[in-house]
Length: 136
Image 1: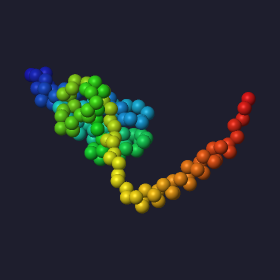
Image 2 (image 1 turned 180 degrees about the vertical axis):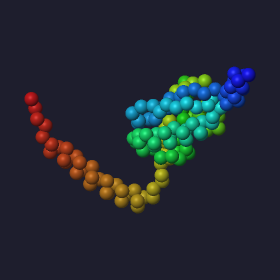
Image 3 (image 1 turned 135 degrees about the horizontal axis):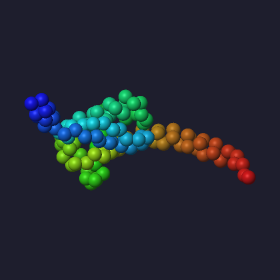
Image 4 (image 1 turned 135 degrees about the vertical axis):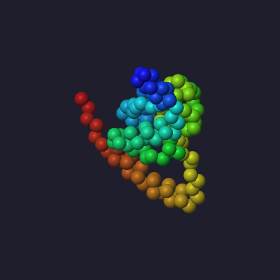
């Protein structure tokens, strides 16, 4: 009797499995157990919270709208945040920041930035030329 109740509870919860999410630029993957019926958005949220809790670098932030979860076996398109994580039948994923659209800057600001930036790269260039390289 007790065994049949446990099986019913497990069926209602869905299957759970270990997933691995690699964050681009981080030292290693994040691994945790998920329910196969969880939404991709919930998995991304858990991954970002785990990443921050572990103190990993680079610092990512926690806004889900800035990230895309990819499945390397499913192609180049990111997963929809509204599909279930178990729908593809894979356990390895990649979390990437969405590409930022280039901001349009008016001509005056871009000229000012170009002038400010030109001095810094020139100074770096001159410093690097003056470094002495010892030969053996």
